Length: 394
Ligand code: NAP
Image (cartoon, rainbow, N blue to C red):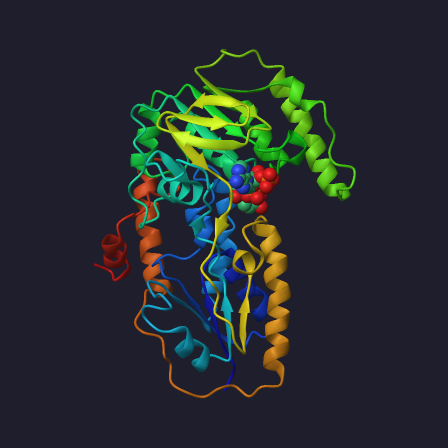
């Protein structure tokens, strides 16, 4: 008998928890449960479709799925197909790695209008998440307001700004790629409610905005006469100083040089949204589409003896994939300490039928083969039933 651990949520934090556990206890039986028939969470549904380098991390997770005592159980939703109580009673430890999947609301008049999209929904659409197949109507969208000064705001602005050629090696879903290509886009406003010295962009992502084929990144030099807050830890001050340097480069770009302009605007607090416009503390801007990139909320987590949370479910929606690796490894140590003095539970295997790793690999092969024909990394299946049919080998 050995201990059995359930990981709920097959995103990066869940897989890094598996990694941390197996490094010390290769004998553990681990089941990785996900409500989708596909693993990898935000790497599949959240990382922007043109950032394939970031998505390459899944090769490490694939190796974990190949371990003989690690099972993937996809298309299985805790709370629907089995209860949290059943799960925690049957496993020696349960790791909750369910992330944050609800868009935060701005909480201003008009934030529920149909042309206001949260970044979770918007990016899930670009990425072919089967629950988010309907995207915004972009056919008359000339001006977009992207609210937020984090990397998600850059992802959204960049994917909207890129040309079909720049997206050719991405795995953006065809409908989204075609809708963006056909939109009469002219202006994308990236709106920070505070100054540029507080933006949470990272340097490589911000610099990429200055290298786009059809879009020029611009900003007003007047907002840039600031320094990173002196009280910040050194890495933060360096990151912010680099951001300010990059923005100074944008401030030197003459407007109107390219068909699309990405405007970085600061101290712009959203006040109200109306059809076709957004009212800010600084004035009114035209906005046929508003994408809020202001963070995510999650459902309440189950608690109890032997239940541990990791990643965004534990810490909130911040931190890149490497941040979550360290976090999950630390929680794995807590799980190992908890298991140390406990006898393994006995009892039957309680998992209902699910999409296993072989089923996921059938989906993966199908998508990669479909992509190869187009020179893309993959063409995603976005229909639940199609995913399940392929997983079952139909
Ligand atoms: P984030 O970095 O926390 O940025 C959220 C932004 O929303 C902040 O600028 C915040 O401003 C703003 N905001 C919050 N509430 C607001 C409101 N009511 N009105 C206006 N603005 C508001 O989060 P994120 O962009 O969602 O990214 C989440 C994490 O994923 C981050 O750690 C990010 O680095 C990571 N990520 C990384 C990559 C990459 O490495 N390429 C890509 C995507 C995401 P304040 O600062 O004023 O609160």
